[in-house]
Length: 335
Image (cartoon, rainbow, N blue to C red):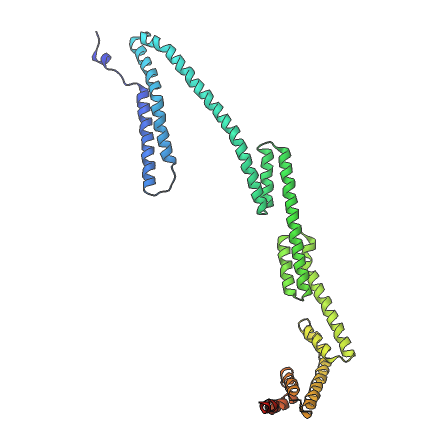
C-alpha cells in the first residue's frame, strides 16, 4: 500500500542548485546596473558577469532537467523505465555533441591565439618604432627582446636591435655635432656664458662621455688663451703709441681681467688715457681757433662723454652753448 510520503515527489537537488545560481546571477546583474546608474564608474564587469550567468543557467537547464528526470524515474521504480531506455541514446548523442562543442571551442581558442599572435607582433613592431621616434632607446631594446623571447623571431629581434643602436648612435652624433658647433660659435663671439650653457646641456645628456665632461674646462682654456692674446695686443699697441687702438683693446680686456691683473695695468692705462685726453683737447682748441664750429662741437661732445670728470671736460661744457650758436649763424644768415 502506497503512503502519502511515497506519492509526494521530492524536488531534485539540481533544481535548488540552478535556482541559487540563477538568483546569484540576477543579483550580480542588478547590482551592476545600480552601480552604473549611480555613477560609481563605467565598469561593466558586474553587468556582463550577471548576464553571462543567466545565459549559462538558461542554456544548461534543459540538459540538467533531462538528466535529473531520468535519474528520478529510475530511483522511483528501482528499474530502468522505457523512457530511460529510450533516452540513453539521446543522452549519448548529447554528450557527443557537448564533447564536440568543447573540442571546437579549444580549437577556436588556439585559432584566435594564432590570429592575434600576428596582430600582437605588429603592435610590438609599431611600439618599437614609436620608442625610436621618442629616442627612448632602453624601452625600444626591451621590446626588441620580447620579439625574440615571446614570439621566437631571433633574427628579426637582432635586426631591430641593430637598427635601434644605429639610430641611437646617429642621434648622439648629431646632438654632439650641433652642440660643438654652437660652442664654437659662442666662443668665436666671446659669448663664454652661452658656450658654458651649451656644454652643460651636453654633459647632462652624456654624463659618461669623457670628452664631453672636459668641455667646460676646454671653454675656460679658450677664454684664457683669448685673454692672453688681448693683453699681448694691448702691449704692442702701447709700444707703437697707438692710443686709440690700445684704448679699444683695453675696453675688451675689462671683462677678462681680475682685480689684481687690472691693478698691474692701471698705471699704463692712466698714461694712455691722459695722452688721449690731451690729444682731444688739442683737436678741440684747433677747431675753435680755425672757426670749425661743427668739428669743435663733435670733439667737445666726445671729451664730455669719455672724460666727464676732468677739468678739460668742465671747460668744454662752458663753451658748448656758444659753439652751437656760432655753428647756427651761417645757416641763419643763409635763410
